[in-house]
Image (cartoon, rainbow, N blue to C red; front, side, top):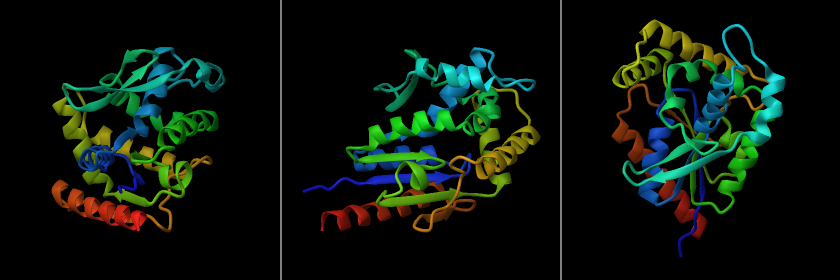
Length: 233
């Protein structure tokens, strides 16, 4: 009899957490939840409603609006992924833009935002059989997850990956700006007072600066199968 587990994948931005989590969920027939996309959706809402910019940030208004922010995941059979919907609108493409990346770490520092999204994440993962990636999945959302992975790579490697990804999507960006954004997000994520980005003692560290995507996937898949087998015994 199969015994499902919770797999928590945390780590720095642009380390390929989402790609790994999607592939892992597909291989195990688990549900994949991109928690970073949830914070991006809130950030996109703030940008669309002129609540945040380089000159101002209306935190109080955003906190008041949280009850009116509904985030859902809907499976798209054409591309095989669960896409993000914000208040009924598909925003999967919009939330991946650089302008959202520039503010998402700042939005994620707000305790009320984290409280709302963490509650949703726990509700989704209650039945197990879930692969969830983010910044605080193993430390806060599911501290008892059976498998915890912490992913990292050098800022330069991550910035190059993100830069090429944005160019491929047709965005007009400079590598220097992407690198500055990666370093800034690392600082905000690691130093925020609420749920900072940390590697828990029981998380397995994977530095993929030199790993191929296939090598990384095979390693984590093997770990997952070991933990599933252990959970059954």
